[in-house]
Image (cartoon, rainbow, N blue to C red; front, side, top):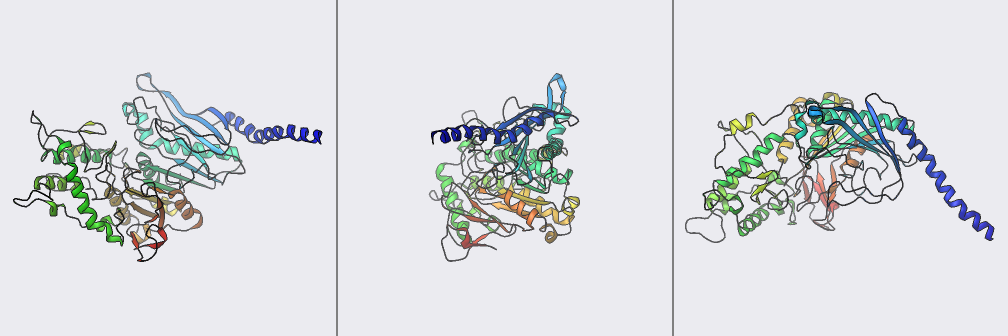
Length: 516
């Protein structure tokens, strides 16, 4: 008996070593892969239970990951302007062969990129990252290294680095990742997907427009699609509108952070929610139909002699002007306005548009009380970066599926800009009904930029696009949950529908809501 136990104990590590070697040996051999213009810089077998490092200081670590092979490399390493080293860094995570579902997923970047995030696929994939779900996952820094933080755009002085960031890097990495997948598993990926938000949302749109054969399914969230014009709106137009009504300091400069008191904001939000919250059949702290919200801030303007329960008329006028969005001297809208939604008074690193402090994301707000929109808008567009094309005939004809989502309380990029682009697809692609056959748009009540706010901001857009591509099931709705409302679920409904309570059953359960 003792001999049998000893043999069994000795056999356990041998079996584990054999199991690892069956995957680790092919992983190590990936270092020998030869692709023109590509250097494989590292191959590493990552054992089950490992956690991925946080994307930035203070961010949560991932949960336990499955065993996988990680392959890192650089595409087109070169010396650029002033001798600075450039190259498109990438990483690909490859699950064990028996765990691989047969697909590739690529994750988008954020801000100015410049960081090689762990190829995990954790965003907008429900409660399990894509890697855990059996996808091979790829990531990239888009061709440069950030030096001073997530919004370091100094790389743009190098033309090629700028082009890589603007549109080229993701397509190049997608092609290399597919070759790595085919080499590792000895068969190509059946389907490939791209999911991104903010800069990643812009990248998603670029891929559908410039590289229509690169991915079968694409998810674009809160896309940074017209950054110059959105910066004009939130960095200049809105502060100037507020400055016109803000109190002045001793030197005569407007104090934008003193425009609204806490009581003003509370009064505003109470009136907004009273008007629009229960339109979906239940008062739940969420505005499910923001496009149907007919709240007029003018109802809060103080009448002559009124002091309490109202807001000064000049402050109301400033809010209305700010939320209406910038217009030029001819009255032409140069960037859409913003929605009145449940999260507009939220504070944080990127505050809601009703809670601006003295500083914005990139420094102090202007203290000017006038703005030349004609001149500002003239230099605010960049055709290399902006995903403006609506001709997606090749993408759609090849069976490609494209999902959009946008937080209704996004204080940085207006959801109405994304919605305007989605609507404009109809004119170029055979009408709204035909577009709905391959693309859907989802508005997310209360959600700020790519997450947060009084919202249900956890949802599986990856699963939705996979089911559409591989099973032909178009997503009429996607179930959302989130820590802001523990125990609650709601359907996110494909535009132009919104979630409406059926009139009976638990109001915290998505199944008791319909899309109408």
